[in-house]
Image (tube, rainbow, N blue to C red; front, side, top):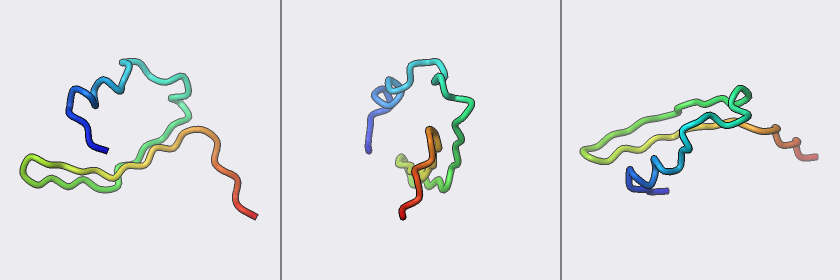
Length: 53
């Protein structure tokens, strides 16, 4: 996805989600080149999917 800064900031309501205590986050990579930056992140929330089989 690609958003302008104001569009991205509008995605956040300014208060934690009700299930915030059960969430975890991990930043995988950060890369910056001039005025462009990318990040690889993992957000875990909700029930883990059942294993196939």
